[in-house]
Amino acid sequence: MSARIYQRPKNAMQSGKARTSDWILEFEPAEAKRPDPLMGWAGSGDTQAQVVLAFASQDEAQAYADR
Image 1 (cartoon, rainbow, N blue to C red):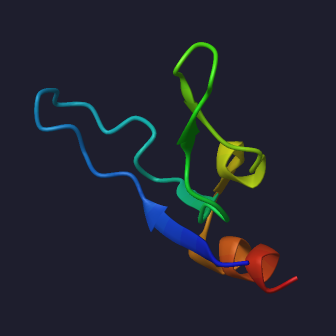
Image 2 (image 1 turned 180 degrees about the vertical axis):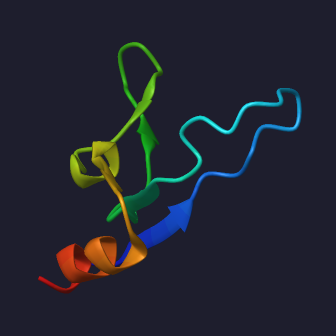
């Protein structure tokens, strides 16, 4: 299972830097989304794609991903 670790960029439309110092860990989707036969909504059975974790440092995020 692969994951992506990154920092959120500063919003160009605002001068604040809130929520830009955290390091974010997101898991890559394991399967492609497909349309629901009844409603047509896009979805999949992959629940890892919904998980977004925030860490104070890149080292903490890397240590969690290595576990």
